[in-house]
Image (cartoon, rainbow, N blue to C red; front, side):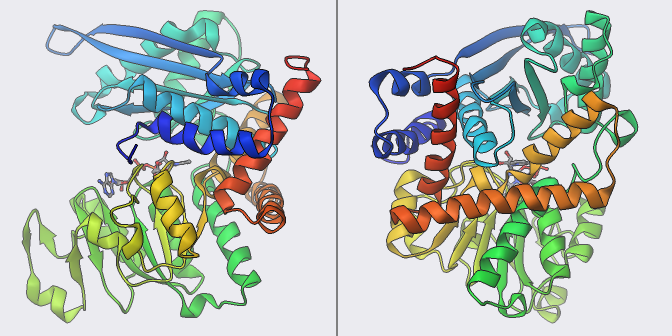
Length: 430
Ligand code: NAD
């Protein structure tokens, strides 16, 4: 089977080899191979034009052996049950790798949020909570933002839940606006967690950020924030991209400038191009070249950071990748076949379940603040995030050296072992 596998099949391939390594019993394996609950509803609502429209909606609760289910809600035209299941399973591994007392879940609505009005978006979000209300709650399942969902959407969802249940429940959802019981540092947490790991990794290898070139795919919440951290720390960010394509400059680009034009024009190439028409003279003067998202992955660099889509590094391009380190801020960007090629080529891949776990870690901090009524400072959030994420990194690295496995295999070993231990303690398995 090639990388035409579905997201869930890709997850299962990684999971099966881990379960074999850990010599799990057939009963233990069975509990891992399927989600505990997979809820599916159709949301029908009246659109602004007066017509009714239906949207498939999902909430997959993969495993709660270690604590309440936790995971974001994605709004995307291609969101489907298989994808949501894979993301829910990754969440279960991720929360276990960073050692926070939560399980794994994920949600999704198959929709194109870009064509919805604000009223429609709000109605759809509130309808999602009504559809799955009995399965949600601060001690049961705590959603969060994911691709195309925002703090404003989290606020509508909390409000709907509180109205329906007649409770005060700031801890029923995370990623809320700061003014509505959100946590400081949540907006930058995913990139910051990845950045802490990268710094630790390069220090361990006696590398200097001043000599390292980085390519970042995706200029959203994860990718753009990461580009800023890297630039500020002296790395040379040589290329960035968004869904319209990328720009490359061997001498480095300034994320602040890119962001300014992206906000104004909607694309990272906005300073030079309007649609497909580009000011080639200005690009030449600034040493900038346009690149496709495929080309971007194969550019000369030391560190590659996929921060957009899944399954972008495959057996087709893995052999052409020049980076020596890949830090997966996106979920599932590397196919299992590509992973094998990269491992043979001794390219270090810091896997999603570790590299982007800063997001769920600060979500957990938000949940604890919601339950206690406390408000943490930026410094406290940062210090705690650093402690949690670097402890996880060291736990995984220990496994890499002990078992001579890749970082992904090591992270899966750490995560699966912790979940199995919790299942045994609870008496779910012998
Ligand atoms: P986002 O919507 O804020 O940004 C996504 C970026 O990817 C945008 O710049 C978009 O233009 C770009 N993009 C879309 N299609 C593309 C394509 N074909 N090629 C290149 N770029 C493309 O989303 P985000 O929150 O930054 O999430 C990005 C990835 O990181 C996802 O895989 C998500 O699951 C993962 N992630 C995010 C968080 C978080 O806290 N934001 C946490 C964990 C994992």
